[in-house]
Length: 245
Image 1 (cartoon, one colour):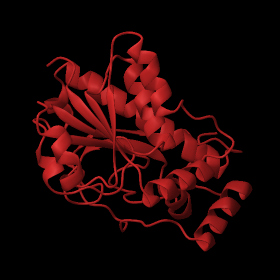
Image 2: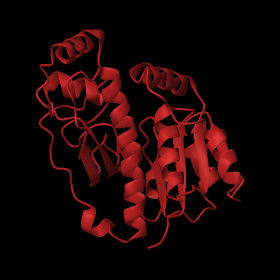
Image 3: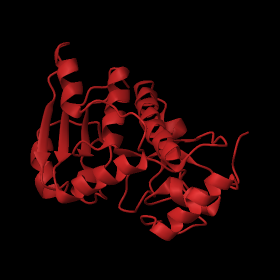
Image 4: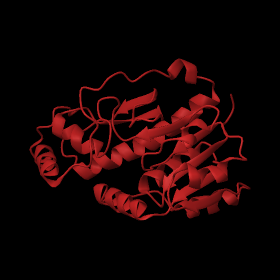
């Protein structure tokens, strides 16, 4: 099918989105436009993720990455909006003939945006789907003894419920900390998105796309302190059920 024409949406300077963009650029997948949400929610989510991956390195800032590819002739607009909703985003997309929209760490987005690109909207989730939908997937995975990993999926009007393209486990080794698990799922999410676009380029999506099925677990929300205490204890005592060594 060839490389897709796509828009890239992320919360402002979210480490998740920075890593994913780095991975995409590394294989020559350059967005036609980047639409950044600059909001209080974006600030809160960025700081929350930075805390979760504390002690690990993160990819360069978005503008630094764009400056680097501009030298090679790729001039990508980075538009800021106060919220990723149809009223704010669609005016920037309406004249673009998009194959895809890629989410690089956003709030939940529904409505017209999901219906606009020819071949769908895709997201990488830092948890295994369908087992671990929602927020703070590594924490809930440890708490409930669910394998840890990341998944790339199509977006629909549910929360992490769209058809799957890719999913892969993170090998969890004894001695790994919660921050390491959050970082590993973040990086893997970017890698899987890159691999998904490579598969699009090769025309393999039809053979890869599949329904998720039902989850035995609820859609999780942010893990409160009492849950995180159990997570830290299980990792410290190495009682999590899915170590590889």
